Image (cartoon, rainbow, N blue to C red; front, top):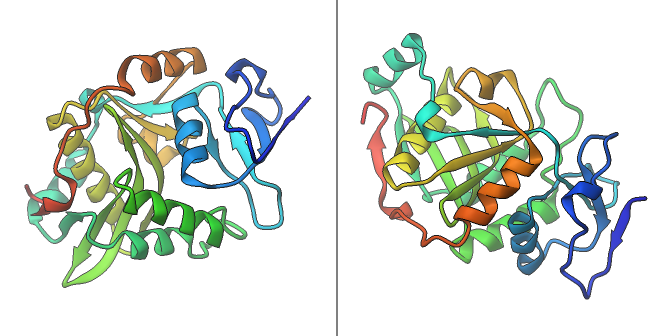
Length: 233
């Protein structure tokens, strides 16, 4: 039985109550205010829904994650990075990044990054919890990604690319920076070939919940707004 959330409560059902089909559907309803989003990520679930659907909350099993030490950078991608064709920054254009991630894509109908979702994560950015990575070429924004940093964990949400390998360059730069800051895990949520090619893999939902318990309350690291580097380091 699917749990419907009440606006006055920030409590989510136990993760083991998530449906097997569709995989990970945990609850519906509620709202996207910052307090609920924080509670959701701390609990191990995230919002994902299409325009016209009720607000849906998910905790898939298995969970796709990337450990910074397991980042895989192919020789061809490393060559692109060494060429320095892209400049990478952080937290310089959050709204532009989330709008680009929400734009229509050839392989998908509609978007799950609805206008209310954009407003919610912009609010989270203004609170210092949501962060963006921007990839620039000749001062044009050609790629990027955004997500949340809580404790020693980064929760990736979406990425986009308008130039060859731009999103991968941004992701690699982010992971290497998170590793230097002592982050333990990047939550990638759902599996994609794109992420697996970079070293992401699946762990059980129970394992993921264990990482939440161990690392969410660690002091955050890093100076997000100050980073702006060429992609070659």
